[in-house]
Amino acid sequence: MDGKIAVVGLGYVGLPVAVALGERLGAHGTSVVGFDISATRIAQLRAGHDSTREIEGGRLVSCGLEVSDNPAVIEGAGVIIVTVPTPITAERRPDLTPLQRACETIGPRMSKGTLVVFESTVFPGVTEDICGPWLAAASGLRQGEDFALGYSPERINPGDHVHRLETITKIIAADSKDALARMRSIYGAVVDAGLHEAPSIKVAEAAKVIENTQRDLNIALMNEIALIFDRMGLATRDVLAAAGTKWNFLPFTPGLVGGHCIGVDPFYLTAAAEKLGYRPEVILAGRRINDSMGQAIAQKVVKLLIANGVSPCRARVGVMGLTFKQDVPDIRNSKVPDILAELREYRIDALVSDPLADPAAAAHEYGISLSPPDELVQLDALVLAVNHAAYLADPADLIARVREGGVLVDVKSALNRTALPQELVYWSL
Image 1 (spheres, rainbow, N blue to C red):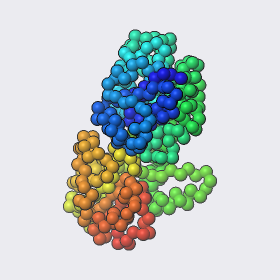
Image 2: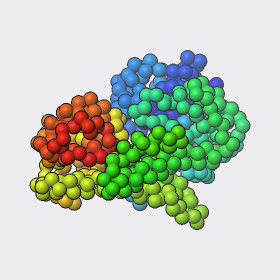
Image 3: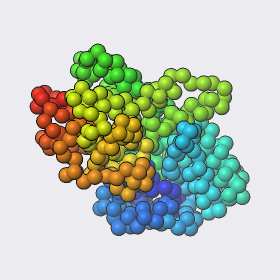
Image 4: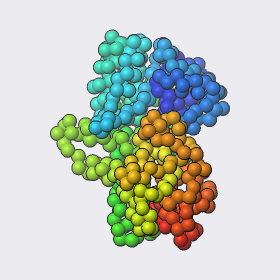
């Protein structure tokens, strides 16, 4: 077993990996360290607080993990696991800048025999053809001779307390048998569900990038179906409940598709395809549909207000939820701002509230000022954009926020519409 393992990037992906390694390998003499460029993040973790809510304070304190924002902590690690984000640019092209900076940070602190494993989502070829040369340039070492490369795609599902790092089969791949054996030893110690050894790094990279592409397309189909059924006067939830009685009907539902995975990963695959001269059709069509849903929901709100005799420019509208999914504080690539932007086109400056979102992050990322919940009252329309458990625990509170006969838009069909007041104008995807 390697004497020291370093995890670079301590967000939603890196922290669970680092903590699990500390818990499982620390007792056997392996030192586990974590590095993150955010001094604020490191201070929080040292205080036993994980703002992502993935790791409880007790585990942070007891796991034996050493964390730092000083890259010197990486030195001496025989294995370095990279879990930095892989976002897209404003033009929806892969942005490998975080990976490049990570390689430039790691390189000078590598030594002969170092194994660098990437978990970040990329298109096939990035690990060996792009990151490898970056590491070689920064370290002065020879790729494939002085240092080895591995890839093990992350499968963390934020907010999911059932499907965790330990309970999800882990894909591993490396550029040599020796490197693969080292990965097998490390990940095998922390992943109870077992390992799948891909025949090459490129296969492992491709497997990861299509996982979320498949989900994206299935949700896009449900979103398009929802738009069609709405025009037919049918409740999509009722249709899906009926269709779901068939044994092989897939249980996908319509909704907003945001976050750092499903709404991003397909663009890594399509960009790689376009470089090879192939223009993807189905994948990009699904992306267009899902990216348009915020606008479609806002337009529906406007139509319902007008049909209810309320002028949009005079309407008081509230939006509950800003994070990209329920019961997580992550606002990255949230599609709720798309709803707000389209409402502003109709001169509606909606009030927004979210008990989990960081107000400073909302202001910085989207220019959104979060309102206290008690300000979202006497509304002409309420949009339940994110079905946090705190909202669903008290539907009466939601109803009380809307004026009598007002509009309630339930994006994810989370509420029992038969239990709602008949005079309330209710709509859901």
